[in-house]
Image 1 (cartoon, rainbow, N blue to C red):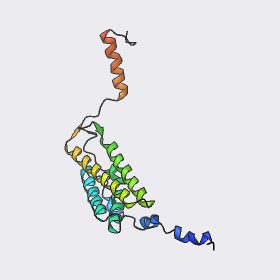
Image 2 (spheres, helix red, strand yellow):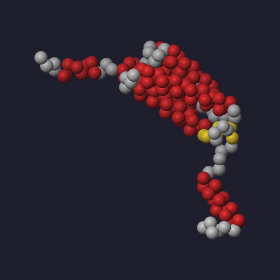
Image 3 (cartoon, rainbow, N blue to C red):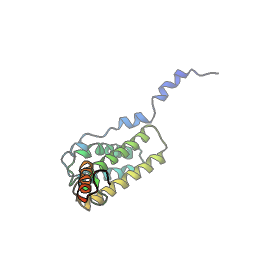
Image 4 (tube, rainbow, N blue to C red):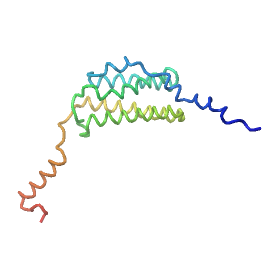
Length: 169
C-alpha cells in the first residue's frame, strides 16, 4: 500500500527549526550592550555559552545559546579598548567578527538538526575563542600598523635613497 506523500507535509514542518524560532532571546538581554566595554560584553557572552554547554543545547541550554548568539550580533556596538591586539598585531574588530561567524555556524547546525555532538564541539570552540580574545585584550593593544600603500611608498623612497633606483638596479 502506498502512502500519499502530502500526508507527511505537516510532519516535515515540525522540524528543529521551529523549536529554535520559538525560543527567541529577549531583546533586553542584548540592548544593554550598546556602549558597554567589550570585555564586559565578552563576559556576558561567555556566561551564556557556559549555560548553553551545561544544558547541552536543549531546553534552557538552547535558550542560553540563542541569547549568546544575539550577544555576538551586538558586540560591534561595544566600546573597544584599542584597535589592535598586541600579541599578534591583529584587528580587534576582525576577531569579534570571527566570533560572530562561529556563533552563526553553531546556530546553523542547531537549526538544520545537525548531530548534537557536532554542534556542541563547535560551541566549545566558540567559547575557547572568546576566552582567547579576553586574554589578548588583557595584554593590551598596539598602534595600528601602517597601511600597505604607505609601506610600499616608503620602500620605493628607500630604494631611491640607497641608489638602487625604482627598478632595483
